[in-house]
Image (cartoon, rainbow, N blue to C red; front, side, top):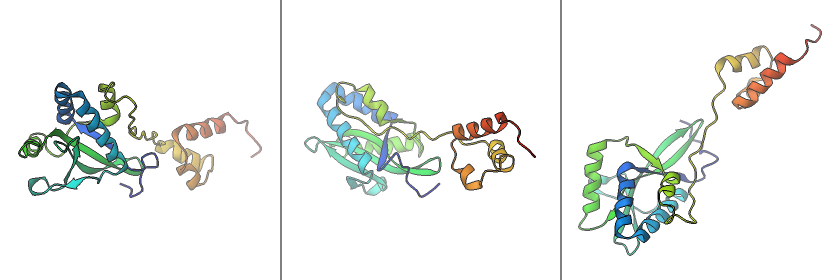
Length: 192
């Protein structure tokens, strides 16, 4: 994975585990305003996935940030993800819950044991759509979409048949490479 950050993602993206999304639905039943506050805190994580405070004990590597009157917590970990030739930092939210006698922390430990290190996640952009009223006026950074790579055969054809420099071929998107090849094969044959 490249050490270069993805140009479309200046900070990071936020993804929620299935359990964290379920937490938001449970909070919605208690007070929809808490959901809005929690979503706003998650948007802060886009700017700085390392915000908040680190957790200790069995949750080293996880972080927390308070929501509302310090009664609620968003708990996440920062993971690296490859996005083509770039890397992105992901604030992977594992729980949104009430901080009652460490209940939310015990729940996260249980979740980690259940799902392991690679949980299914949902992008914050999608989660905002699930809570349209509470998310009104909020927008998240979309997941970066990486262009489809240029197939090897096309890359080699552009280098060896069309005689484009390697650096130029390496910089082409798939659409640009296809157009260059199409232009080449459509061109009338010149003197040889």
